[in-house]
Length: 570
Image 1 (tube, rainbow, N blue to C red):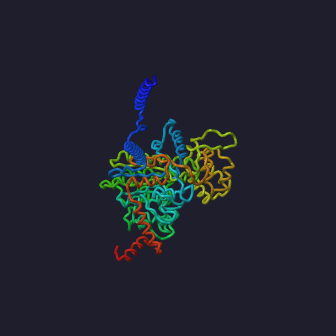
Image 2: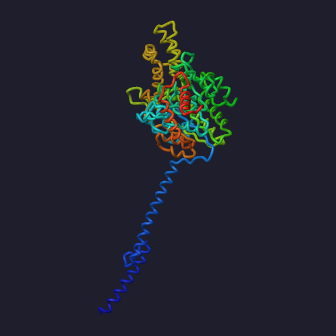
């Protein structure tokens, strides 16, 4: 019996092994690896397995790299291109909320109606400088112009006191036309950072000289529109505020070929394409800053608006590059949004933001109609004022309200009203408290702010402190509108980025550093900023070895000295 059983058990095992092999094969497994296969077969399979692992890893790495490149690389246009960079100085996210609701109220719009800016929201920017979590405009603009962090007060200078090349300087060197359009002093921090290099932003006289071309790189700007005329006129002359006797306007015209206009009449010659703008063109339309839009609109025959200057600059640069294989780089700044924030004046701020939005739309329309590829990128250097679209005005449970009508009733900025008060105090023959209080209430508070319920306490404080009138007027309107402010300075809040989109703009999507915006600008134009930085360092280090005269063409003198030293005539 035993001899008959064994073969039967063996057959059962073979059948079981056969079924097991088939079942494993259906599951992608095999028992062969556990059987007595030749050693070389096992080595070959191990090598194939290792190769498969490496190949899989390689594919994964390649996929990650391609994804990263798509997110961060600049897919540059093949040929000619234009780039417009807009800066809304001091405008934080709350400014947009404030202005959007204000516009909906004043224009009787649906709550779903938005600003042009809202339609092009792209991301947010972190704003800290190298010296503080709260940046100033100089360090903020250096991040844009150089793509590098620096200290508060630096005008395209780095923490080690060396200059950094700017995207505008590199664009000019590469053959692009360049322009700066602002509503503040053209020597103020933001425009200065694109076309000059000084240690501290208060060196406005030096900035003016460099901006017209008397700097280490020569003339790098083709068009400048803004205020700040006093820094271009000699000390002692009407309207001049320089500390020296240099006539920068004459220097600009005589030595660097600038055309010059200084009033609305001169601007209107070129407004709306009436006449072709000859480059280089310097337009300085105010001694210091162009007035707030709230006030400027009542002086339209004296000062052009931001959107008017922007449109004229776009047409001028487009015409100038018509026959070139290079386009242009234009920086446009809504400068005085920042000043309204410093003054805590919400009525002035909403009008500044609306005018900036109008200029933004003008650029969008221009790019859509242009035959030349172009990109618009816009952001803020920082937020100013710590604006809150709410204010608890008493100790009771807060109301969930704010009142746009209060801002709509204002016809003048607190800055303008304070200036009127100071003039009245200086010239009034009746110096009595009663007379002054009556003037303030009727001519300034009611007529200018649209406030009819000023308390005696408010008027008394204004009467006794006319030097603080700007802040006091702004406080009166902010309280009634229930608008809050946390500071008269800057804040560290992230600011918005806007764009029309285009090649490589994914690099500034999401939340990025302010320096990433600066790096994008240079990458899109495909310009060599590093070479400009090296040249600046070589020339400025050489210049520091001797003192140039302040009342002469100091950079030209430096160049002449260097040429003579090298046996070259220039």
